Length: 71
Image 1 (cartoon, rainbow, N blue to C red):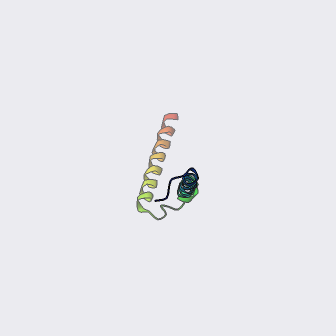
Image 2 (image 1 turned 45 degrees about the horizontal axis):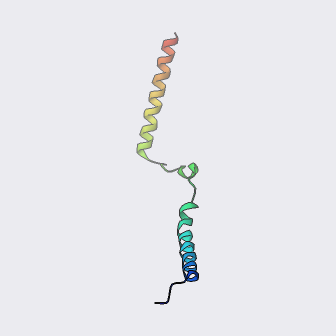
């Protein structure tokens, strides 16, 4: 084993830091989340259609209740 020198340690440390930076780069600068990538995610889903229908029915029931309350 060669003797340990300050220059040798500095060279080794630079190599280790370079490798670490290369490994961390994708984690730090990966793809940013964008709400637009969710568009169409549930297209054609029967569950989502059912949820939409039930929400629409609930909104309509609230409208009817509000109309009766204002009369």
